[in-house]
Image (cartoon, rainbow over all chains, first blue to last red):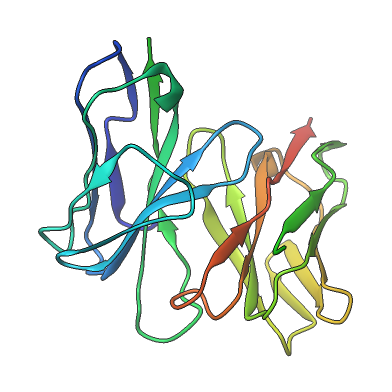
Length: 114
Length: 114
């Protein structure tokens, strides 16, 4: 099992609240990713990082922001949650030593905005 | 347009039976194709990876095939078990998983009944 952890697992919160989804990995991976996944749909990359102080936006436009101050930690923040942000958020990491390394996923945070 | 299409969308089989899941892709250039298994409420876990020169690869009761000419892959599950119930996601990389983009299919939802 990969050592990548997401908290909380579930979050139900009201509109307008500030939310931070936590993601930590203990594998020393430089590359980390955030995906959004809706039921029956493909994963969409919303943010990624190639290392400390490196963050990039992914393919899917997102109102969230990320930071990478430490290698093992890649939190995602929503400044003002809206019902349209309701989704499952998956964090992943990968080893950049050599090509074709798999991404190791956390178990996700299921976010519901009321 | 780079796309990954999976079929069927969902499948129900009886325990002990075999099944085959399909993945067609239009991603170019092609680097590798990976099958992930995603249990309900969990993150995806890598099952196999296929590179351009590989035709078949097995991982226990899972056997993946790749036809790079027709841009098709299949995942065959032998002697299914209840624990095989999950979503199976096909992911294609265009320049290597650590350098290029990943293109995700929507998954096939497999249910194994006793």
